[in-house]
Length: 66
Image (cartoon, helix red, strand yellow):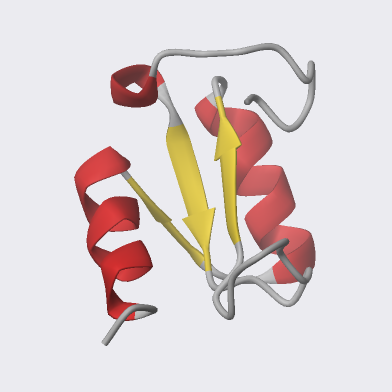
């Protein structure tokens, strides 16, 4: 889900901000998806975290289960 529009977006097209100061739901490490890379950068500037693609975000998510 795109955090700005709250609409479903393709996972391969999304830009993920992972590990920001803004707390996520149901996970220790926050992960927010954005369709627009510029919006992801604005979010990152405000809350920190790292911008990555789906594969990077998925790898971080899998770390929660170790």
